Length: 135
Image (cartoon, rainbow, N blue to C red; front, side, top):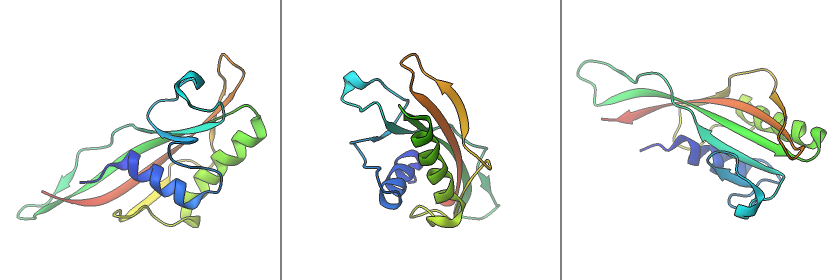
């Protein structure tokens, strides 16, 4: 069974220099540094998707999931560059996460969410993943 957020984190760790799962790349909502998370980090958050499509008599269904990748950085340019690299990875420059038919970014540039209460810049990229799931 697919786990889109975990699969995206694995894909990004394998394709983007500077991101390492469990070091500065995490699955789940952005969290604070006291949890052992550095101030410059990326977070992969599943956000759902449309109802699966199943054809009569088929033993699988076509699924679509959306995943947000939040990039937090003390330096605006460093955060923007990493968020742009995430976007590029989904737009054909990094391939497709294993087990998926397709993946793409749902925007042409990262979304800038301004700064958090500690002055760190926050960006987001939304990725769409598509796959066939056995029923």
